[in-house]
Amino acid sequence: MKDFWLSCGHHLLDRDAGGGLIVTDAFLKAYLARPEVAPPPDACAVERMLHAALLADPRRPTAAADIAAIADEDARENWHLLIDFRDHLLRHPTVEAAYLALARRGVGSTPPLFLNQMVHAILRNALDDCTDPFVLRAAEMMFRSQRLTLHEGALVAADDELIAGASGAPVSPLVSMLGLPAAAAIDVLTEDNAASYFERSDRFDTALDLTAGRRGQAALGEALARFLRHMLAVEAEVEPLVEMRDVPFTWYVGLDAEGTRIGDHLWNGGTLDAATAERVVALYRLMLRASAAAIDGPIYLILAMTPERVLRMKPQNILAGLPAHERETVS
Image (tube, rainbow, N blue to C red; front, side):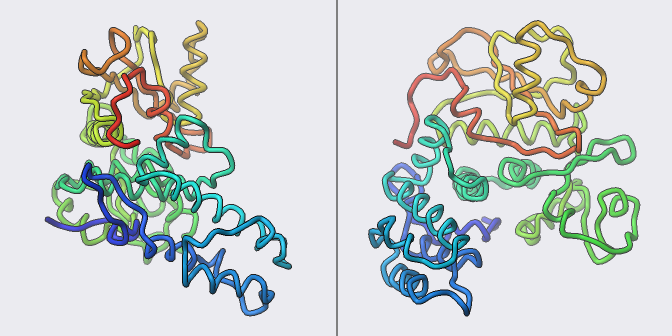
């Protein structure tokens, strides 16, 4: 089996009998090595001592007073966020259970970066046996923001962080369209280059065609179905729809903030103007098996980009908003 997404740290995590991810000391120490947390040369003695103590014992209880004694205000904020996140992970038996608790009770002050890192590791676990590069690339959308653009009549998604950090002279129409430098090797994923995905998966430098009716949308539907199976132990069929016409929104879930706003607007009897309709990236009809569904009929999933054509998925929305019976595999 080919490996992928080594950067999520899944090798640092253990597995329980049900396949959930168990936090290890090595995984916690990886957070202590983050540049936002590792004390700079001019850090105060209190911060250096706290960092050293946690490297020796990353589960060491850390009181608010320990952090309050740190001289630098930004450092104190970073430490509060990290310790709160660590403690949340350690209160739950698995990473999946910790994420599900945040999805259902509210993420609070948990930084989006930490949420995305949890989803990254969870999806790596859920997709461990997946050999389809299109499904894996589509799943990246669930933990990394995307920039959308029209290229040769296709709606193409590329990694927003890659684009935002790039500059220089473009050398191809796609690179030019996405604002990437000449040195950036970015390709739209196709059958011809799909085999290269595994060796470059941690570079996040492939783009995905999300045009309605094409493979990218179906691949994201498959990734969502596998995510639900792993997190809630429910079997679902997630079918992409080509258009929104005559869709009865008896139950809907916005897969991002924009999708939620659009769904709320339609639910309240509104109609979409051309500009808003253009921002709908994908619409899915989700069907749960009868034994898993708490309602009859389909659930619609709405995925939309911002006016700036950025897509920021929130996988927690589907866990909190799906009318499924309580049968999750993680607790």
